[in-house]
Image (cartoon, rainbow, N blue to C red; front, side, top):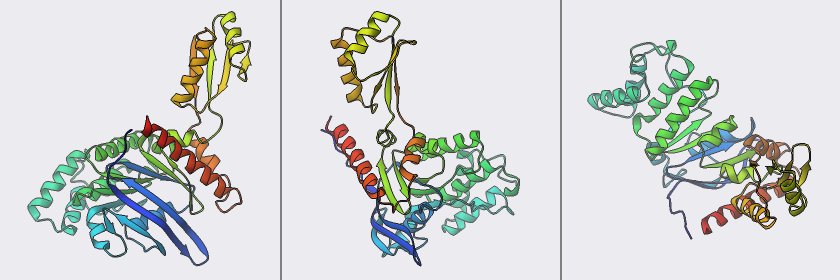
Amino acid sequence: MTTTTSPLAIAATGLRKAYGDKTVLDGIDLTVPAGTVFSLLGPNGAGKTTAVQILSTLIAADAGEIRVAGHDVATHAQAVRAAIGVTGQFSAVDNLITGEENMLLMADLHHLSRREGHRVATELLERFDLVEAAKKPASTYSGGMRRRLDIAMTLVGSPRIIFLDEPTTGLDPRSRHTMWNIIRGLVADGVTVFLTTQYLDEADQLADRIAVLNGGRLVAQGTASELKRLVPGGHVRLRFDDPTAYASAAAGLRGAARDDDSLSLTVPSDGSQRELRALLDRLDAAAVEADELTVHTPDLDDVFFALTSHPADSATAPAAAAAATTAAAATTHKENVR
């Protein structure tokens, strides 16, 4: 049996925030192990940015216990700020000065000496491939360059936790992939990344764990694979070249959907190793072997639409959220026990 002992970079329990009679966050719980990417998904207005603002001390929660980098956000906000960096939806870059001047300005804000500030600025400009543009006004930068500079500025203070609030919104596909590589590099260096995004493939590619927020409530948490298994529609497709083998498999796999024209069978499956192994055992018992086996699982788009298609305060949402979280927890437990 294996267990995870990674310290928590972020831990929030019962996090609540309301503006007048509008409840934005309704008692959410979050845990983010250090050195991982945690992605918070949700439709517009779900409360993602509010969660980031509270965790990064920009606004106060109405209720809840919150610790970031081991510090209580309510009582030790300054210690939290010293440990984190924040890159918001809108760039903090000053377009009237050069990229290098933006970096040196951040160094001054972090009270670095002139020599140390120049050293850090030079290293980060090299790391983010901005050396050639360093002396040019930021107003001349492309969107991707401006976002790279924005994150480089965030790293001046050497934060161990970084909040990225929709960092690739508006970027072209090449710039998005460049940003993904930057995020992977940060995590490889031990940095924890709290990522909000509108792009589900981005969370699928980057996140160790994902939480889905809808109407101020968390409706599911887990790895991308765990969340995909919560949505029905997964299946295994078996194709045969030999009609005799196809007939034998169909007889041994009762309940499989047949396609006699293509000699293929479709078997419902959640895509887990356990179910796939059981399916192969049934084929062995029938003494047949498929010529082609394809596993189809729902993607995060399917998960997102399934979990956010109804208001979070509807009669069915709490039960759906409980079922989703329980299923994800059970899957995690099984994988740890193996």
